[in-house]
Image (cartoon, rainbow over all chains, first blue to last red; front, side, top):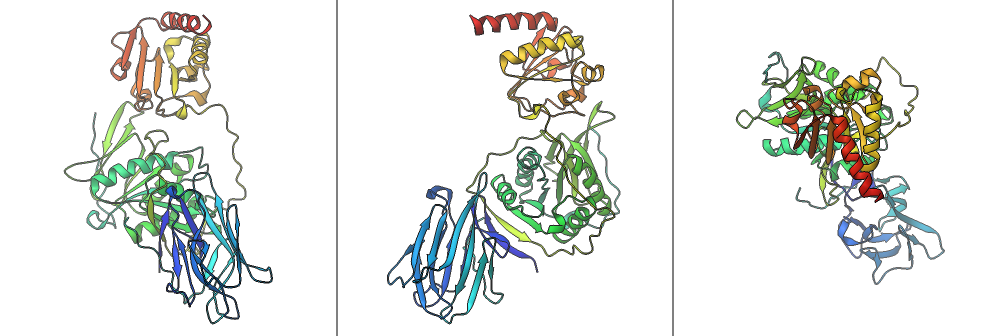
Length: 148
Length: 347
């Protein structure tokens, strides 16, 4: 079956080899896993990734809560480190668990992710190799509603 | 002269079931060659008249950047097939894939840039879909009553402009010369639907194998992008006359072009040719000197914003295309103009 997505002329996330203006994995919750990559609009200043999430490590332990790329309380034991092109999340022992970077083209931007996302049971939901983010087949990708 | 031609009614795809204006994306030299963006702009006009959407068909590998550009320039839907086997342009495979897409989604109109690849690719697609194709169109409009595509193309060696319609077969196909239409401004607020069709690429076998692609180095300037162009015709008399045009060009910051006769005579390089078999230009100012105004030439200058024509024949057809006309010997008029400009420049 053909895949259908919403794509932006300005900024997209690379997921499963497709450009997506925004996407969400899981239902928004403070206690269970979700990952929401919000659309980045040209008027918002720097084209940096906008992510809200509740993230867990492979043992099912909460590592960080994010709201629009800012840690929120109770944020968990991991640290968010900002970079020029995005941010990375490090575990308490200094290991990079997730790196999200935005790459500039001539007139547009694309965000790529490296690392693994796990749910509250420690199961891998998605993983990225720096090129594309691969989601688990049974995890639906929710896209933001758009009037096009 | 206007001619109406109707294709044979032996088509598989009938008009009533088709919807959408499609543009085939030629992204090989994306940032230099703007023909896809120009056709997208025209496609939007056509889609507005048909109350439908503009789709762009992108085949290739690692083409994310181009896809976003097409959205910014007017695409409502992107049909994207990314595969390593599509990384190099191969007319056999591309034809197979595009035909599968057309048969599945049934667009009403399919537009292709009249690049070297487009000229090879579009006729094959048209043949396989048993539809018609108007080549090298210089104007595209929607008939307000019948809602079909009016495709204007130079015919009979450019001596007439024929308006061709394809009343029954679908899609209505046309190739469009680079520079014919003006691209829209980049709008990065735009969003579009991205469709990734599942297409049988295994079935798209090719009798040819592309071993290597080498880009030809860019020579000289691109007349299509020049804001001011001075064009010389047979009336310039020889290479010396073109030397005068070069002198004026330096003073005005203009590029110098030529019609067919001076190029044939060797007075100007072939990459300076303007007209039906050369470049279609869209300068803000065109000064055309010693040109008669043959349709082969005027089809290439019709999108110029302001045209000044100099010709000693007051009945020359070029004056019908001009905003301002000077009747007189081009050499003398240019001599006075150059003297005046040099005086103003150097004091």
